[in-house]
Image 1 (tube, rainbow, N blue to C red):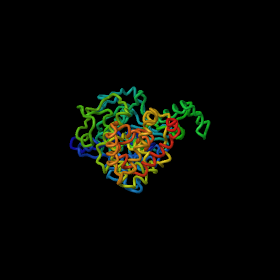
Image 2 (image 1 turned 90 degrees about the horizontal axis):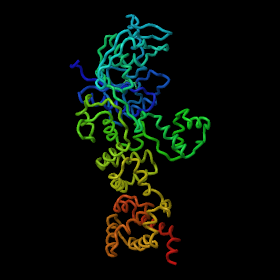
Image 3 (image 1 turned 30 degrees about the horizontal axis):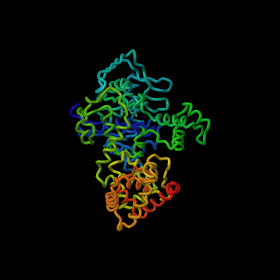
Image 4 (image 1 turned 90 degrees about the vertical axis):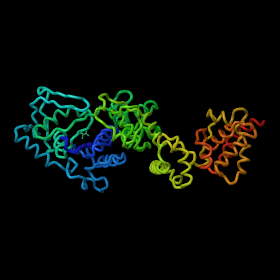
Length: 514
Ligand code: GLU
C-alpha cells in the first residue's frame, strides 16, 4: 500500500452547478494529491440519466478550471467535446461510458452467489458485520442485522451509485476517497462490495457539512428562501407569469429558480451566492474563495488564516480536519477577498476587473478600453474593493452622463455639505469653480493642490471645498481620493457637473440671496 502512488478523485454528479461544498471537497482531494506528488482524478458520475446534463458537466469543468484545481485524469477541458477527448489511462471518466465494465462486475457477484435478481434489479447480499475506519470520524461499525440487501444494478441496466463508485475507485487505483459526510453511511455498502470483489479498500475521509449561520444546511434552496422572504416583505404577489405556480412558490410548495430570479430582478435583490459560478459572477477571486473554503473544517494549526495554495499543499493533513459542521461566514469571505484584491499586482487587478466589467457590466466597455483612464480607475479602487462587482457600483458615477448625476436634497450629506448655513457649501463651490476653470493643464494632482492653496489662503478646512466638489461630481461624498477622482473625471466634465449641481440648487441659493 505504501509504495502505491497517492491517487485522489473528485466525483461530482452533473445534476446541477458546482457548489461551494463540492469545491471544498475537490480542493482537499486536490491538495492531498499535490502534497504527495500523486494524481488527482476528475470523474463524472452521470449514471442518473434523468438528472444529469452535459450543460452541468461543462459548468463543472469550467468552474474547476476557474478555481485552478487542475486534474491529471478526466475529461479534457481543452477539447471541444470533453466526452470524447479525455486525459489518463484509466478512462473513460464518464460513468455513462463505462456500463459494460459495471455489468462485468455485477455478473461476477451473481456468479459467486453474492447478488441476486429481484424484480429485474440486482441486489447485493449484506450478510456480514461491517467495520471500517474513517480518517475524520474514526472507527465505524455496522451489525449485519442492521444492514439490508441493496440494489447494485437497476432494472434499466444502469448500475447504482454504490456499484459504480466502488468499481471505478478500484480500477482507477484511487487510494484516498475524500467526500462529503452524507456518504459516510453509504460507505458500509461500499466496503462490503469492495471486499466481495476482492479489491483493496481505500482510505476514507469524510468531510462534515457546510452550514448557513442559522444552522440550516447551505444549499441551492437558500436562493429560493431569500427571494421568497424579499417578495413577502415587498408584498409582491406576481412576477408577471405563471401566477398559480408563483403563489405556490410563495407558499413554499416549490423552490423554482425562475421565480427566485424574477423576484431578484424586480426587487433589484442580490440572491445569496451558493455555487462557485455565483461567487465568480459577484467578483470573488479564486485564491480568496479557496483560502476561505480551506478553513471550512480544516485549519493549519496556528493562527495563520490567510494563505495561498502552496501553503495549503504543504500543510494539509487529515488529522486537522474537524468532525463538527462549519458555518459559512460571508463577511469573512468578503474580507478575505478584499485583502486578496488589495495584494494583487496592479496589472493582474486591472486585467481581472476589466474582464469582469466587460462580461457583467458592458456599459463599462469604453472605460475599460480607455487604457489611461482605466488604469487610474484601477488604482483608485484596488485598495477599497471587496469584490470586483462592487467596483461597478462604486465607480458608476464616472461613466454616466453628466445629466444622470442625482443631487438628492433630502440626503443628509447633501444638506450638510451644500445647503446648510445659508448654502455655504454651494457658495464656496461656485467661487472655487471660477479658480478651477483657470487651471491649465489639468491634472488631478494640480487640481488637488489648488483646493489646498485655496483653502489655506482662506483658512478653510479642505473638506469645505472637497466635500461639495465630491457631491457635485458624484452625487455623494463616497468617492476615491480627490487626486484620482479628478484625474478620471477630467476638467471638462468636472466643471460641467459643478455647473449642473449649482443649477439644480438654484432655488435654494435664491432663497438665501433674498
Ligand atoms: N457522485 C457522488 C456525489 O456527487 C460522489 C460521491 C463520492 O465521492 O463517492 O455525491
